[in-house]
Length: 153
Image (cartoon, rainbow, N blue to C red; front, side, top):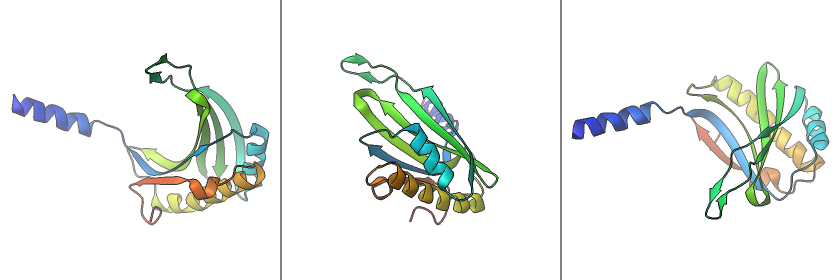
């Protein structure tokens, strides 16, 4: 029985997809206008093909019951030959979360690509803060890394 439990645990852990790269997250007090966000992204040198989509997020289960679905405001862009995106998640209780980064699902993105786009991610966040009146975006961000070097130090 112990062997079966051990094997189940090993396969369960090994079967999980992992995000490899970096993610930057911050909680905000408001969601800026989509026009401002697109203009800020287009102002960053080298960014092109900026597009916006609105998606439905999941529904939180709370003590008071199942909450309404959140909204994801996703912005896609190209920097040189790299496709990337960032988003604002509006969820239960007027909570707004900003997420930006670059990662691969269960594979390590090339380190040269990570280093190249990291600088643009930081520049874009500063541009959003300045143009769209998001106080403290760049200074309050929390950064998470997995499988990349020289980024999250």
